[in-house]
Image 1 (cartoon, rainbow, N blue to C red):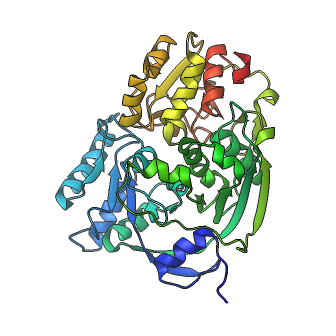
Image 2 (cartoon, rainbow, N blue to C red; image 1 turned 180 degrees about the horizontal axis):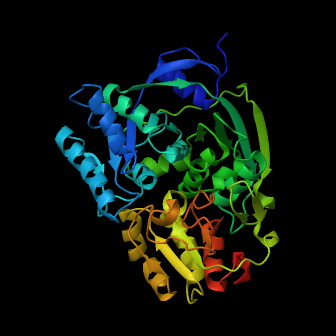
Image 3 (cartoon, rainbow, N blue to C red; image 1 turned 45 degrees about the vertical axis):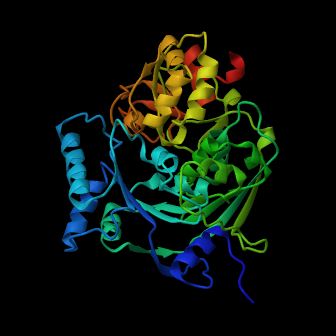
Length: 419
């Protein structure tokens, strides 16, 4: 009798050419897409060259994105991007993106149709797990591993056990993917899903757009997960319809699949969530945070820099003024252009925001919004570790775009109902 499997196990088994796999199995698998950015690619390129290979395994299945320190903030970052740009040109890698036609890697790969259900994606960035929202197995690796993948097109994996998260109920008006995943991380802790697959499902997902689903899978790694994943449904396939010409391979978990743990979370009972310094699992409902005056609010990143996120923030900022520093970075050139067409950028500028180029920017303490000693920021990013966005004496709170916009208006952490 065939062993029942989860969606993660099925995708890995299919790529390994195995009838089935089980948690703990070590397998070699071909990679559908390999990804690196301007920080991780230079080392991966060096490792690739050390293999002695003259050509990458497939120039059409490698994606290189300059997004962390762009537009280049200094000489060192300019040299990094130059290295990646020249490598892409020399080896015929057509999926090379930098400002002007790109954006944040985990925003642009889905929107350009470079990921489809059933694929196996390896990226030299921990938030590669974002693509699980499309029903793909996607995970981050180090630059050394990525360099070998670029040469061989293969990697090895240990099959993870799976934790199932069922979201039930209909989320409230201001509840999005960020609130659901923060609440989940608050339960699991930052090590509660170490090297596990987090499989997200349940009826609440039917009420969530792809933008919200990307946010959920993006932060699976903040609980230590190897990957986050959702089964592709009609919402997924509708998103891909005009973006990708590739045929999706839709896998679904067997009803009898074995899970290490099952969490049931009532989305209808949640209010907006906030993660307190200095860890994504220090989560409270916004009404329980207390008064926290802010010096800066940042809206953007691979977690919440998509059009749907900007629309939510703009809906609350229309006709209002920010009373603290407000920085908005659209997640991609496509998002930026759509936001211009919809009048969203005008709303931000009239509210007193600084609207910048598609970039990771301040998320990793890169540039375009570094915090000084003693400053407090509320950010729609994914991490708030000590010194993450600047001075180690600063503090970062995490929340979704609705809380971010309301907080920018009131100059303190606030829920959208307050305005």
